[in-house]
Figure 1: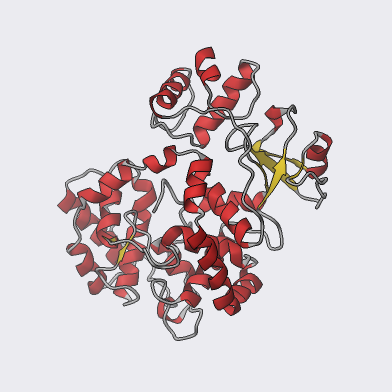
Figure 2: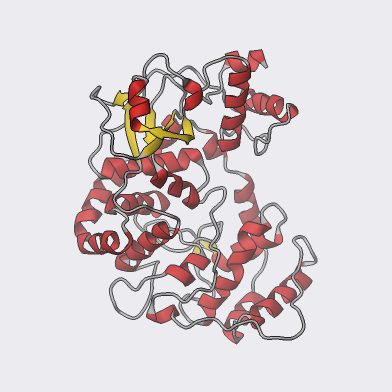
Length: 406
């Protein structure tokens, strides 16, 4: 399942550390400027301009032929518009996604491919459970990689005007991979163009693919060694800090300075301890010298997590707060932590009530990211601002009380 937006890679055509993709792409030759098509233009004209641009970057006839045969896929647009799964609460989503199957097979794969997880941590500083959690959530360890034609999917989303800046930079890297015989022209993957067992975008495949088993081929669809090391390298590239934690579950007191919570409001652990925050089992927080925010995904009466700088890297993978916290918690589970304490949260808003709240926030001038019924990052921040104004506990959780006050 692929999700909202992904962080793009700045250097799309960096030399990759793998034999099958190691050659550098050609520099853009001097001469007449390339015409870049605007989203929504006549499709044939748009595609021809894209082909001209691809040619200048060194894409050869095989890649250009694949582009010539690419077409629009209306089913991709349907999936792009329908991501209602993120209207679920953190508890609903995580308890569904962190299944016994994923926990069992995650532990088994950490042992089975232990040598590659060890190399990934040595080379990139990323622990095995972090990689394994993404592997589980994205494709159930390679079992469900998607059946969408990847080139058609990216062409469709790049031509569409909803998020072209996200998908347009991925088309030429995919054409390059096809042109170099790394991927077939009809390669299949997720509806948003990601490929392989951890759903890697073409730019990451091209720039960060690793030949983990040394067979001279980087195969992210069929070779676990390549999947594990490439995923570790990708995570490192987003800013992962070696040897540091990502999340820790904690217990918060009944009353505290709620306005100081939130992922971005990082404080020294001593500050949280002084407010009465403890570890989940009630023992004192051990000061590790780092700063962390406190995330309350279900409000102040639900589960609570310390979130460190490494947790921010999860949002570079996927910008859904519900997905990222689920992925981070699954990694903690695979590292030996218990399931989170659900607490006793207040009833939240869903469906039409949630949309009504978003509309009121929008009318007040907040950017809530769309009236979609999803409690995303922008909506949470708007809720916190209004809670502060109304002198309500500032925990970012939408309730009937807040809606009535607005």
